[in-house]
Image (cartoon, rainbow, N blue to C red):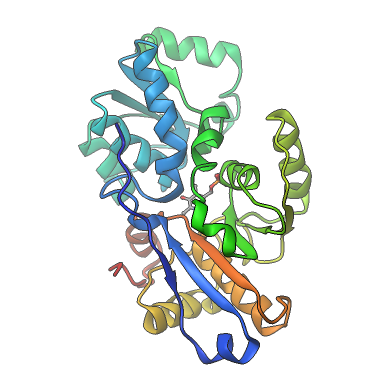
Length: 307
Ligand SMILES: *Cc1c(COP(=O)(O)O)cnc(C)c1O
């Protein structure tokens, strides 16, 4: 139902890589589908199938006002002929920001809840109220991570990707990381770059892997020092890096996830973290829709044309 376009691993060419004896390629999940971008394509795919086979006519999910997940869910639901409801954290601000305006234009029903109520979103009484209000729906959690999402993200790596020594991905809820772990091959190491501030992420990923009984023949490591101040935070260094990367490689990154990961990878390369001969595959998890809202919110221009 959601059909993937062919995905390319785009090799990067740069004197630093040559000097260090390292190959670096970007898996362009930002180009996986004309409307549903990046890792969200994989996370939503089986959930939509399940919604349809379960006889639901609508899906409901949660997110912040600039959420890639909300945007992708609105697109995917429309493509699958399902209605969608987005429960949005915080007060409604008029006019809607570009992310929410787009979701609404696709037919997503937006429902705003204040932050303290939003925190209760997993509680039975809150969900019961939603059923009363909207009727029966297929529920996808905030960030989209559940069993079927992980099944989807375990399909990101393809057979040919066995030749890479390192796979790198961003971490938000960890659903993408978990699927990738499952599909590693022996001698591969998965590197996760947390977009959130705090060491809690190590414990959270451990829990996630335990809850979903995920094991791996490969190895993994999580970096918690490339958050640039925390989730959604940024500084000039990050913005400069995103522009530098675009000017050198023609690839657009975002300041919430992929920009932070690539800045981290680049630093690690410069610091000789990777042995000479390493072959790194960095997952571009998409999410570029957010760049428009970021510019609207901060006045900071970002590259926006993905080539
Ligand atoms: C949602 C998102 C992530 C985080 O994915 P998780 O599976 O929640 O860890 C990473 N990158 C981009 C671009 C995203 O939109």
